[in-house]
Picture 1 (cartoon, rainbow, N blue to C red):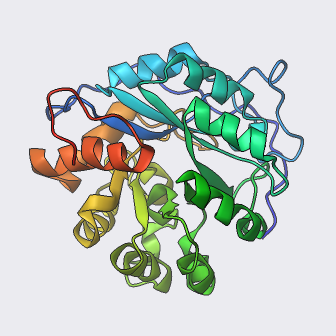
Picture 2 (cartoon, rainbow, N blue to C red):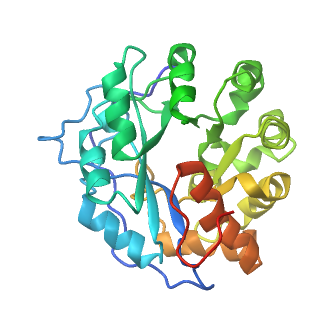
Length: 300
């Protein structure tokens, strides 16, 4: 699957304001999917990128995290920086207690680099078959045993309409599999599509995880996204202990910019009880990303 050509048009910037929460955000809540993006000069963009973003620096990321009521966050290496994880690692090192990371590396990465990533707070590797600049599934076989040795997971940015053919290979991996954006397929395809059914089967039977994120990438209903609600609820019902939430800030490569607070507030519909939202926002990320227990709360 080839990546689309580079679009040098500057992406939209995230909105400056965040809608207030419509439910109590629990202490220890974690946004498990966001990006920091360098300036393109000190931290260059790769030539084979699929889009060109404005910078999304550490200060703006932390302001977003606080504005959403999140105590913790997970940074995912953005595709435009390719395997140059430097900026993400710099941010992680400044916030060792509250941030974790998911990196992108090539199959020939050295042991010392993997150890450096782990020490900075990286707990997984991302495999990306949708945007230029990512590392695809061809690297899995060489990297999976090394991820397993570190206690990491494999995170997939893929359209799960292609999951059925990849399923035997992914099910045999020695590491947990985490799927971005509820499988990143249009909800207009219908929940009975073999791709979404394969994802549901994987979270039920293989211990896979899914990120309840990116509703605006799946939906035809900006900006209430009601058509995504049955998908999120089906995933939560299938594996409530392996669902996490992510903002996907700064929302790159899209034609209309969502309100990050509105995206957080979708959890009020997707997970109506305080206990279920706490599981998704606090307990599950604590397990997946190796955070210390939240003070005053028992470990899950």
